[in-house]
Image: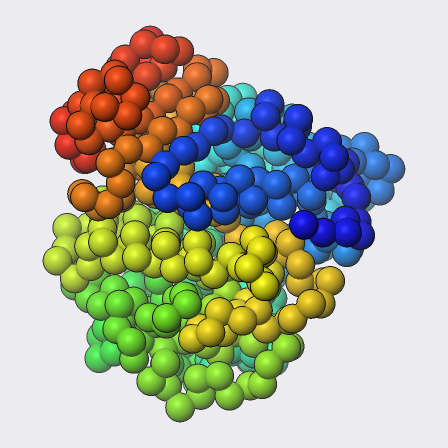
Length: 470
């Protein structure tokens, strides 16, 4: 498929053997979904490095052509990589960023881009079941949060950021000089505060847990009061002068990634824009700005514009957020079929000249990758896919306790069967399978969850099921 211009830890020749031991297995009746599931793991493996410049730690890069890791996609790396069966790769990745800098402190370039690092560390622990690793990083995560407050927090308690250091440069609402209040960093810091509080409870540090719970609650209140544009029914950027941006942008969906909006308070109305062709619905993906806006796709092409093209980075965030809405926010504004349609469009976008491909960003109508054959863009590690299959379509929702919760977003009537196998979860081996008529796998009708081969939950139809680990 390629000439393999860059070889990191695992070469193409070694990839098959490595993947057979490293990842969960997935099968379904849609060959395109299966192909891209394995392609994305194959591409993710290309970014795994280890050497003197990483402190002999394993670490995932963002650009295949740049050995030095970049922090903008770190939250995505941890979300995708938490499903690797061997924990050493992400243990090392986190330690590289948190303790691989001068004097054993965090990397100096960690804060070059906005982060939801603490949230991602906690979310990963909910997969591995390893509280000790997260607890061991608690003081580092607290220090990291405090650094953000010193660098980016305003006197009123909200956070500001330049769009370029949100990794979302050349956006309609953005600026490289104005300290705008953005839904991105405020949602990230809310998620980080909640995660630190949860890890502090694991550590038995109840005072710290209370402190960060209060930080999260205050930031939630401020974000809802300040960044929700009631007229536009959307979360928006607010400028330094106090006015709202006149553009709805995909970053307005990010608050739901972290469960920030309160349910049944009217915020769910924002999701009507996701399925509106004048909003964010493009033939080849979810746009990063509403298509009706006069500034849509006006910044040119090829310089990392977030003024409308489809970015897998944003698609990943939006689909996670939508999954949370469909399960935790009762609403008739949007449905599972909308999630699945957006997911299938995401699958279709992974093509270049007929071959599997993942790059930086692409045209919302044609699907053409806007960096063309630029080697910098190829295998761009700036998004998730396997995590969306596992937590979204299949519906495994990681928890901190010993219960397994599965709530598929696959709509009824789409696939008659699927199987997710060899999922390493809380030290057990999970298998999740769906068989509409019981004929494909021969194990009976319905949705089933097995832990170490033992059935722990089942239902005749797709829906929420829970089972306790043995």
